[in-house]
Amino acid sequence: MARKKIIAGNWKMNMTPSEALKLVEDLKPLVNNDAVDVVYCVPAIDIVPVVEAVKGTNVQIGAENFYIEDKGAFTGEISAPMLVDAGVKYIIIGHSERRDIFGESDILINKKVKKAFASGLSPILCCGESLELRESGAYTEWIKRQIKWDLEGVTADQVKNLVIAYEPIWAIGTGKTATADQAQEACKLIRDYIAELYDAPTAEAVRIQYGGSMNAGNAAELLSKPDIDGGLIGGASLKVDFAQIVNA
Ligand code: PEP
Image 1 (cartoon, helix red, strand yellow):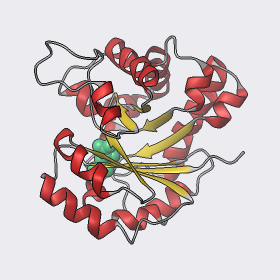
Image 2 (cartoon, rainbow, N blue to C red):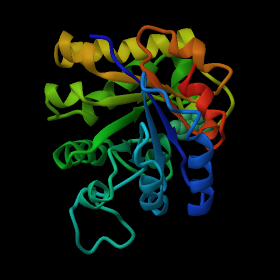
Image 3 (cartoon, rainbow, N blue to C red):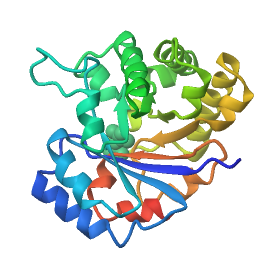
């Protein structure tokens, strides 16, 4: 069965609640495309108003972060049951900014993936290499190692419902996109590795996005590649241009 494409915006630490509502309203008539899954991953403070604002549309809401405990003394954190109760469907896990700026390890990321599935959230698991690893050629081993550690103990049935975002760090927010061939090669590498870790049907089912300076101008070529099932979009998800990626 053909995999349905998934176009997800990662708003990062942008958009006050009122800015968020304006963007959602502006995008509403433009992203009405049932052929793809459309997701806005939004800051915690925007979740409640944005879930309300997209009711009755094809858009689903994701969160950008959560903690692995259900509740308790974890000042500043938000839990999976809180997100689910608020109407959140997707959760970004393992973004390079959380790995590099906030020190999240593969051990924590693996716990988050398992907790997300156990709570009914669909993880968007990010992986990808630095420029140094890309240039040395060691990026293939690096990506495989991230996938292996982050999916330790995750079942094949769960992986069939997983979204993996291949996001080369050197292409995030830099305006430097991986070429469509580079992105396809890495996404295929990930799919082949899922087949090795699990089995062929699991590899066929898992959706793999490309992320890294994807925009209205380069989306169609990237999305035409056989192993690229969508995009995780940062900067370009903050503008109405995002709709052009959804419809690319
Ligand atoms: C991201 O951070 O997930 C991302 C892909 O950002 P950008 O599109 O801005 O490169």
